[in-house]
Structure formats: structure tokens, C-alpha cells
Length: 294
Ligand code: SAM
Image (spheres, helix red, strand yellow):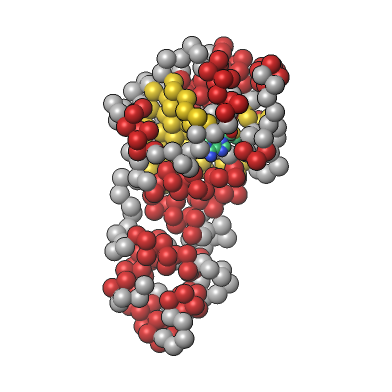
């Protein structure tokens, strides 16, 4: 435990950074964690044990990685910044269960990585303080690739966390809420003050836990089309669902036909996209798909 206290205190972090002549790159979302309590909270939320695996995206100088190494059976970390690799090797040197890969997580073949590093591990969590500039692409890649994940526990921008966890009818509810909730059950773990980072980000932060679903909560005929309908329905938030869908799928004539299909799906054409549940979107996209509207 003492090593974690060392690495995550501001003094120790500053010592490592200055000894290696490291300078933060804002463009890589480098805001490192320097607070013990928040590290504990993140690791605890993932429910790890010695049998499980952890994938960390963006280990930085290894504050969270070290904590994961002491809790999980196997830890794999992917870091884009080559300058951090020697620092990570030094900090993580005592741990035999950690592998560090240099690369961009958006370009890495994650199925291959899982085969290599988690071949004999049945349950894997993603645990990370994510670079905020690529939060959504990273999370959607993890979810869409249907990796054998138990859960994803990540520090992200608070506003994005709220959108992911939002329920129908709320101002934060949108296509991101539906995409994330199709693949997982999100739960806000905690809101985090700026002071836990060095340097401090200029947006608010939160930890969110996504419990990855084994099966989506709804049956859709065609996933790609389902998400297209959802996107189209939120194209202009103040428009009704009928108006948004008309612009996308019924240019020119066809208003009557569209209203008929909406009724068939049990949806009042004057409703707004933000009031429809994921079940209603599934029903609607299935009716449209069945009627050859694509
Ligand atoms: N985990 C460390 C911590 O909590 O102190 C650092 C977190 S910092 C918010 C984000 C980290 O992600 C940085 O180390 C950054 O270099 C790395 N990173 C940024 N973009 C990345 C990408 N596309 N693939 C992998 N790592 C990335």
C-alpha cells in the first residue's frame, strides 16, 4: 500500500515528472490523478479480485495501474505517449502481472489484445481515467466490439457521464444515452472535484460504471438501422419525431405513410425524440425496417 501512497501524492508525482523531464500534453488529455481516495473508489467500483483482468487505457505515470496490479489478477495498459513508457516501466517494475503496450487504443486490435493478455481470464473490467478528448469514441469502440467485458469504470467529463446515464424525458437524454444503454447499464459512481488532478482540467469530472449487458435489452431487426433511426430522431431536438424522421427517411411526399407507421408502432407523431424509451425506438425501427424504409 505504501507504494500507492507514494506514487499518487502530488509531491511524488512532481518528483517523477521532473526527474524524467516530462511535460504534460493538453492535446492528449493528460490530467493525472494524485488523490488516494479517488483511486480507491475507482478500483472498488470495478469489483476486481485476483482472478479477474483489468484493461487500463492511458496509464499516465501508473498511479491507477499500480493500484490495479495489487487488486486484479492480470493488468494490461495501453498508452499512446511514448515518453511515458520508460516511466511506466520504472514505476511498475515490481509487478509481474502488468503489461504495458505503446499504442493508440482506437487503433489497437482489442480482440487480439484480449486473446494475448486475457486468454485464460474469464472476467475483464476496463478501468481508466480517460483522455476526455476521445471519451465517446473509446467507449463506443469498447461496447460495439462486444468484447468479453464485465464492466467499464471510467473517469470522464461529468456532462458526458450525465448524458450516458440519462432517462427519457430529461434534458440530457439523447442518442448517446440510447447507444450506451443498449450495450450496458450505466450508473454514476461519484462526482469528482478538480483538485484530484494535476494539472486540473477546466471541466467537471465524474466516475461512471457501465455494467456490460450480455444481451441488449430490446430485440432489433437491424442494429445499424436502429441507431440510424435514433440519430435521425434527435437531429433537431425541438422538432417532433415525425418532422425529424420525415427529413431523413421521407423527403418530398410521404407524411401520411410516416404517420401511419408511427401509429402502427404505437407512437404519437407529435412527440419529441427525447420522450421515447429504448423499447419504443426498437419498436419504431422494426416497423420502419419491416416496411422497407431504410
Ligand atoms: N491514468 C493516469 C492517471 O489517472 O493519472 C493518466 C490519465 S490521463 C487523463 C489520460 C492518459 O491517456 C494519458 O496518459 C494520455 O497520454 C493517454 N492517452 C491519450 N489518448 C490516448 C489514446 N488514444 N490511446 C491510449 N492512451 C491515450
